[in-house]
Length: 109
Image 1 (tube, rainbow, N blue to C red):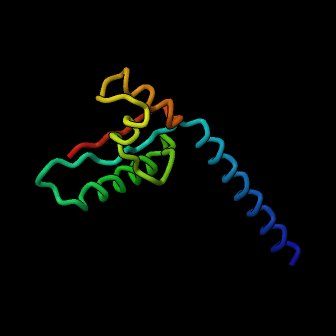
Image 2: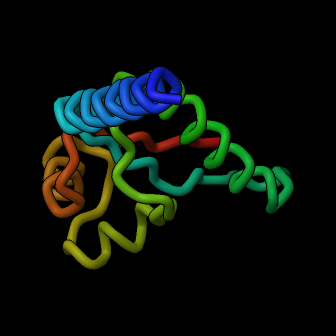
Image 3: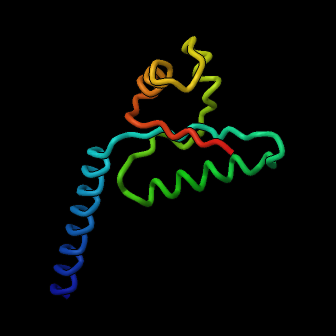
């Protein structure tokens, strides 16, 4: 019985250490915001949302960036709030700063 208890304690410590390592590693990764997929005419309405979810899942699976939120933000709305239009460094820099991220992912279909 004592051996089983010791084994469970060691397993618990390993699980806590692994979780702590994952959290520390996630905090060291650059933050990224996945903005809502811009959909052109002729593309089904639900396709953009599906692409958003796919991109987020793939990025999370890579383990190289930390996605900032579960909600895809509309680039136009964020730019309007900041008084900036266009996909230029002068405009997207403040968008990234406002979202507190180092990377912006702006998919287009």
